[in-house]
Image (tube, rainbow, N blue to C red):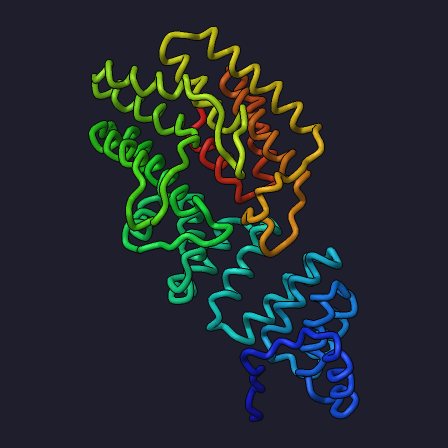
Length: 373
């Protein structure tokens, strides 16, 4: 059986004169897959995207065992040709060619997420390659996300508390976000079991930034959801004064820092409204929820744009994102929150189902569906 050819390391032709060199190499040895692969890289870099695809396809036909060629084709099929099914097939071939490449596993999972593959299937695929998952912080955060998405926060906690993370570009706040999500889920489970002491412990810990996560919460980040649930637990434990303190913090926080800017409304606005209701300020709660609903309906119709400083958003680092669709989905979720808060449970639940139909991996929608009043 012939040995699998290896692509040399530290070889990335990029100069214009190297186009002629590679074209000459292709003419000299038309059976060698490396020259069209390298020339495809150069062309893609120079914005000759379709020419690059043709060259990569030629390289893949000459030797289908080259994982990076298939990986490049997967990205190009999705971002350039708009053919997600071909992109998925290319990534399958890439990972089959090198099943020990943790980066390929991560990128394949990100493509699956973009294509709406259900959380359970994604989780099963990652669990089959636990060793690869453990090699990367981003994959580790992703499997924690999927454990939370599928109602297994205890598994997420074991991973999050036992690993030292390092921040990476595009991943700012992700480990910390799953830390909060995990503890909120565990706290709610403790409340359901009437274990108020454990619930208070989980919710209180959600306010912290553990040292092993290597990042801290932004001073303008809204934590109204944590304060609301901590207030619920304290109230159930008979600590009325402490509960009122946390509900007040949840109710009076203004704005939320997301995607490198402060937003007047966010998913946290819902918890501010719930906190006002707990404080006996029903009129304030209703007014805030109606304002949230009006904002969400306006957002659904608005043209989406990306803030100048938000260029490292994780959704844009690998595969192109439909920012208009993402904005519309976010708007539908805010509408669902507002309708549920206003007591329109049937309408709110229908909106949540629509959000999850559009985006099966939507974290906020999955969590609210599990906890809606």
